[in-house]
Image 1 (cartoon, one colour):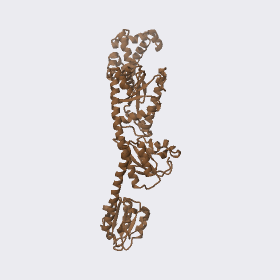
Image 2 (cartoon, one colour):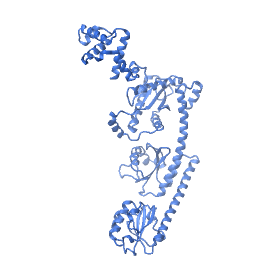
Image 3 (cartoon, rainbow, N blue to C red):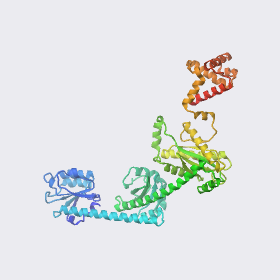
Image 4 (tube, rainbow, N blue to C red):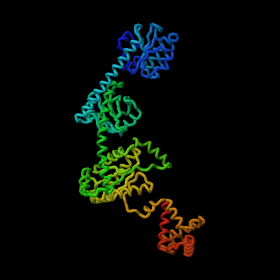
Length: 561
């Protein structure tokens, strides 16, 4: 309770506020009575202290120091019984109390401190009991709204009516997804697009449930904000009310808290239903791409429930989080992370929701599900799709690539979330979706092997260099050493000349004249070098098997470089 709410107890009837009138709004959590000289060891925040002044009767100037110390600690106030050990409160103490806005009460001579302590604590306990009854009634009231089948929107409207101020519900990304009716007016609705960027830093730096808004740069015409977190198994957002009360009534905060609790329970229930439904969906599509759904009619019947149609052609997209970057890039990483506006998602469910929300901006149908450590998306490309070009597959690929590049860039900028994607060829039948999934998986794995990040990679038939990259590095090095044999152990200058001559010899299809012309050498010099290569390697250069071996070894050297 506030000190001003306690001044009317019978035992304080003849008392007066000697100083610190502007601090009568201070909250009182407890009351204590003390006449010990070691005051300072027992002071507590938001405590009202009663004393006769016996411990300081010989040194009244100590009272000024006590007032300052109590104000610094956040105590509620100090009540002194005068005309017994102190004739009057010293002027210096009154001056300090007024300066610090710290309530200083002068208790009347007929005030019994023990009885005053009893009455004050009784009033506080009575207030706590009233608050608990109010909290229970509020929780029951909001719960009954949901039990009657009404929506969260109804709770916001009722909460706004009780508080007489606008209310909004924001998600963990600080974007409002439900608001009271006040925000439908032109004055309030125009501020909604600015709430995301404004709320995030404000709530991050103000953990208390009541926050004074800055006088400048605020998009709402209010001076204070009440906010309470929405929590399930993880933070889901905030319930927020804007007011013009610099010191909101405690019951307003209690009402907001109970509404937030009811909303949290409702969201937890919805989340459980959604997770169960999503698990069934993931299991079905996981079996589909693994080739475990062999009955086509069963595939069509179950797939139709999730928007999969047997008369559509589909692209398959596999989306994965990139591996952590190497330490050499850590400085750039810190710069990029400082530019990210929100924390990266911490779970697969969060990642699913982010990608789903970004993909929904296309105005194009899609099917999204989770598979192992990746997200998988089926995107239709047929005559029924309003956005994807049905005839030209190249245009469809360009359309998909552009949108996935936008998704990847936006999630990196906003959340410092590094994603990459692999895209399959077009599957013209739903029975070919397992093959399309493997193609998309191969596409993203080829980008990972190449050390790329935040890429969009289409599937293509692997070139020889792609196949060679799949071989462990130590095996490649062993093959190169065995192919060139003693040639690699010769002097550096000679080794460079021989390898260059041998490489250009094969590039010119084993024509000595063309090799000599490209190297600006005499024909006999080229012949001499090639003979030397045969001697050192122990292999005939023109034999088809050796020719293939040398060409592959040169390609491996390029890959290792």
